[in-house]
Amino acid sequence: MDHTTEKKTDDPVGWSTCTTVLPWIDKWLAGATGRATPLLIGISSPQGGGKTTLTRNLVTALASRGIRAVAMSLDDFYLPHADLVALAAANPENRLVHGRGLPGTHDVGLLVRTLEQLQHGPFPVNVPVYDKSAHGGQGDRSPDPAVVAEPVRVVLLEGWMLGFRAPRTANGEVDVSGVPVSLLDEYGSANVCAVAGAPLDAYGAVHAMLDHFVHLTPRSVQVVYAWRAQQEQELRAARGAGMSDDQVRAFVGRYMPLYELCVPVLLRERLWGPSGEEAAGAGKVHLRILVDDARRIEKVETVD
Image (cartoon, helix red, strand yellow):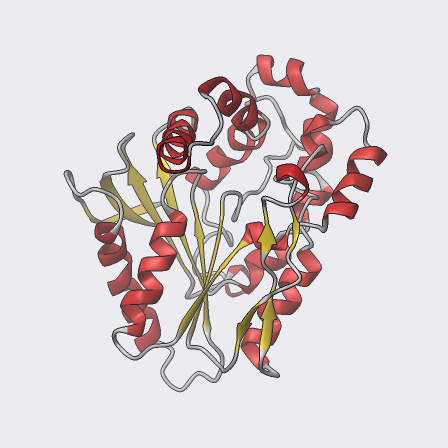
């Protein structure tokens, strides 16, 4: 069941999204008075959906209130370049893992350990930084991590596939029936199942650690093409370099099987299962923010 808590019509994404989420964080912090460990809040949205801007603004807004927060990105936990090359070589027929981005290309164990250290110490904590410009744009882990010197009250973790779970058939296999045939033909049904099986399941350890979850989502994932193209157009204008629209379509296309497979699950189910079940994360809030194609907020609702 969804409970609509607020509606907006003409607020552009950015600070308006921050001011929408901030009262929820205030409420969650008030409910965690005396807690020794920081709140872990996950923020998910498609590429270009505003999650990085939101986390940056939230850190700034919380700091202005004297609340220490740190923002982390799933992107910074990609495997080192050599491991990505080895992964691609071990899967020559699966283009979904030829390069960073999809399930199996992150060091989930490192992410879990980093979150645990931010919760319990010791400090300082080294948070990985991924240099996407390394190796001609293939990327690599930077030798210079971000350093969190002392405990914080809020940890914000953002990622395009944070919260993703694959639908399953009655016998437990990945159910790709909702993925367009054109995508299955292009990338291979078996390849989609391969990344959406055990590699995607591994991120469940991260989801279980989250205290609350914010999902920014458009009405259709097809808008991701336009959002990413807009980002690249802005890069070309500012730096003189960026992907062409055709290159954007090819780049985003590799992510579409997971969007088509997993976003519907996230739109109909609470991240931790039905509320009220202690084992499924009782007291945790799954907050959904629906936005239009211009990233203006249309509706805010909690998911039961």
